[in-house]
Image (tube, rainbow, N blue to C red; front, side, top):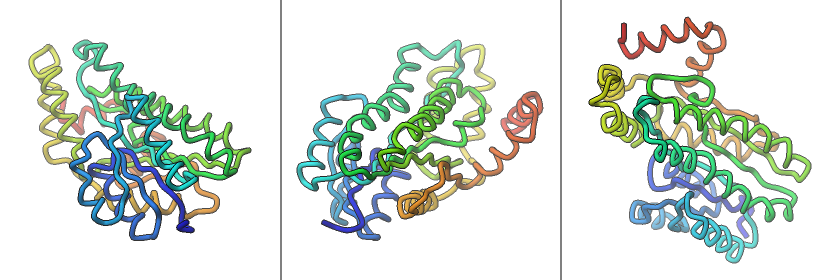
Length: 272
């Protein structure tokens, strides 16, 4: 077996997930890339990745994926829970079905996949679970109640999980990216337009979409991928790794009062 270890990466069809798969392959890891859009992973397959169709809201696909890795490799060393999306819109406008889906994808699916790999990691007495959170797991922005609620929940979930699995030699790490070059901003803007573009919150929606058309300070997915690699290769990884403009956002949240931070958000979206 490759001494670098066996890694499962979800959300591997684009952005941070795909960049991480490529980097880990270069570093000699055995990498399984999982996503709903298999056709978007053909390029990493040609580079040596094992690809699989997986929907983190589908129990069968997750079980099949984990079982396949254990059957083929005999172990799972790292789980990178990276699949997710941003569902934005005013609380009053977002259908509860969509709110539940945001939690299903960004929290419950991740949690279930974690449950499925833990027995193997406990058996090995080693492993790393790396969760993609966000600066949004500690701060808040406009029209993002359900997204931020899910990411705040993920932070608490990860902290508790870390305490539970440490005695078994398993590390839990949170990655907190800021704005990143990916499909994320486009998807979030589409949700805002669809949900709140023609409601009492339309002015806020327009401001959100305009701001996200040209986001400032975005990081390359490669920057986040290198953070993931750093966490994987560290014998004693940090509990959290912060990247890009997330550092400034988290610092401001720490030093500013709630009311002052509210003003910063309004100013950022040019809302008076």
